[in-house]
Length: 188
Ligand code: G3D
Ligand code: MG
Image (cartoon, rainbow, N blue to C red):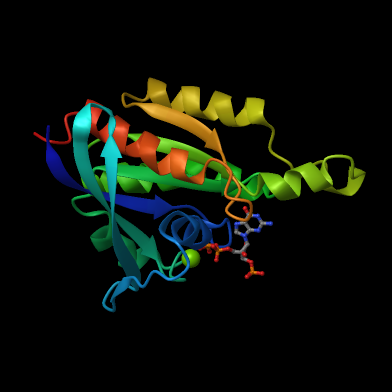
């Protein structure tokens, strides 16, 4: 049995749902700490993994500073895994994932494990038959293909589709990341 604290970051374009995912995972009543110099929240939650491993994850979330590149190098420092989040109803956020990964790996100095998240699937379900939305929608197949591409860059990558609104797959996504970090030798 092990006890560990993992630092993880939430990255992705503004409005894709990073803060909502964190709040859904942690519960509404949760208050995060705020690091004013880099404009980031961080919050800790404990989870129990198979095999009796007790892991706490410290989740770092940019508090509306998503677009200020200058503050983000501190944000990534020491993180052991990342949730790379896009919106399944906003293609530009999907196209930007490669830029987020590059920035993350550059600042962490190693290819930390990634869980790729396609969020807002409740909206995609609503928009799926709307021709005006067709070009905005990112399919499951596209998400999976991007995750496969990330895995070829020399790290582990998993893919999940979530809704921070309905809660579907939110807990599973954080759990998956903790498992990937453990597998990558996060205790070393
Ligand atoms: P960010 O932290 O990545 O910038 P937020 O994104 O968590 O602040 O979310 C941006 C907006 O998208 C919020 O709406 C939020 O409620 C909404 N949102 C986040 N995730 C989902 C989801 O899975 N489904 C739906 N339907 N909406 C979602 P507002 O209106 O508060 O700006
Ligand atoms: Mg936010």
